[in-house]
Image (cartoon, rainbow, N blue to C red):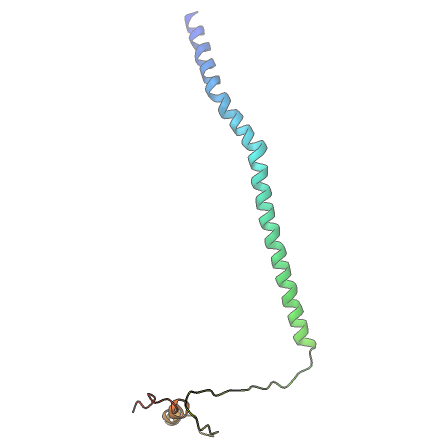
Length: 116
């Protein structure tokens, strides 16, 4: 009879220790888990919407470029300097021999450009 009372006391003590843990797990499953899943759902929906918007904008850009009339593009270059610059249009053969002349043409207006 002494052993059965000791076993009951042990099981009672074990139940007292496990009951709060089981209740905490139940609380976690009932409250915390749905909140975490809702947060993950919100983040994934936000990413899905951003991806779909990016896809829509890229399709719109491709279709716009595809159906837009070809226009001649004009490039304008402005030369600005603190010193007066004599700009000339030079037609030159751009090979290895013309690189030094190209350097002088590009950086000739600067006083520190002569590296010779």
